[in-house]
Amino acid sequence: MADADGNGAQGAAGRNRSSSLRRALTVLDFIADHPDPAGASLTDIARGLGLHKSTLLRLLAPLTDNGLVLRDAERARYRLGSRAAYLGGVYLERLDLRDAARGVLTGLAERTGHTARLTIREAAETVLVDAVEGGGPMPVRPRLGARRPLHADTAGWALLAGLDEARSVEAEEAARTAAGGGESGEAAARRLRAAVTAARRHGFAAEDGSAGCGVAGVDAAVTDHAGVPVAAVGLSGPVADARSASLTSLGHLVREAGREVSRVLGAGTGRAQGAAATPRAEHPGGAGRPEGAGSDGPGRSVPHPHRSPKETTAVDRRQVVSTQAAPQPVGAYSQAVAAGGFLHTSGLGPHDPVTGRVAGTSITEQTEQTLRNLAAVLEAHGLGFSDVVRATVHLQHLDRDFDDFNAVYERHLTPPYPARTTVGADLANVLVEIDMTAVLR
Image (cartoon, rainbow, N blue to C red; front, side):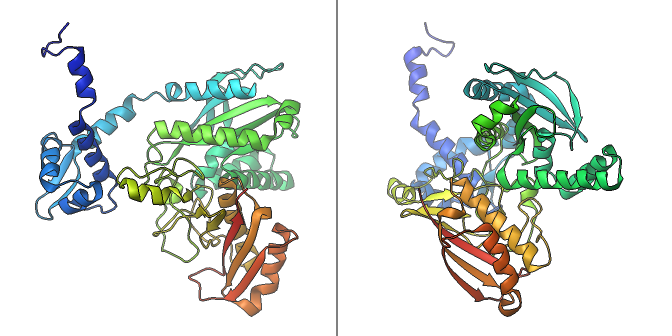
């Protein structure tokens, strides 16, 4: 039967295969990804997509007519129009977080046998909004709607790891108060600080149940299109079961699950996100680009849609490694690149991956943070310090700081030590910068 336009099933199928529509959408995607906020010139687009300008102008006409693309006549550049923003806003407004996460929760529960949870943040509390029980012999049955302070469990810790420092300070004060103040309060605040720091480093928060609750848990944050943590995806299970499955392995699962839900919410578009997008001056100890910028998760590269087949083949021989658990890029470099059987990191310094600020003032503090950043990048590709075969160390004050630096270094790396070169260098506002080469497993 023909439709209202007189087109039958074959016509519909033909429209779905329309090369013009596909090319027009590719043009729209190119303009959205173009790094210059002023937009892309006709020459930029034509060269990037391998199109003749006459063909490109025909593709641009309906996009500009419908407000998806705006042409700046004065600068002769094209950028996204207001209609694109409107459509994106409608999508986000109508998106139900529970619907977006339900399939992910079901997959987690089936794969692990534990209870998968979705928790949101409301002010200084977490609220459990959905759960899927696993098939294990002793399933944890959480109560939907249950509220807890941010400082109280792994969901809150995972959220705090992506929030600004002020939220962490508030949570620490709440932990002190809940513990009754005094030395107990200070101990509670220290435990919270350590848990949040670990969550920032690993990309997930974990509790082995040793505190006496009998339930182990792991959670990872879910971020929205602006990179703001809005929820946490997690797993709960009996302590014995969770330990046998390895909390670290479960943590990796929920971390990827959190990223999957985040992508549905619009995160991972290749633009700076969340607290990690705090503006800061470029420094030698930088890091790679944000999750999703030409990447399909840690350690996996994907062909760029605007490269020719020849260019894609060359790029596919390298794998860009990217993780939000290490400082984000402020220049034209990646956190690490896997190529030729080795993982090569950029030079990393002592910058907090969430705030972007230098962590600590002493060489001991800054070396600790630098090595945490390197560990996060290595872990994003399934590696550790035991896989490192070479390190290059730059010290602002070589004679003064070498012994203290080396003491920290020896605590993190064990014999047989990798080859190492340590030199004095004129660094920008930091005391240490280190890059490493690790052999791929």
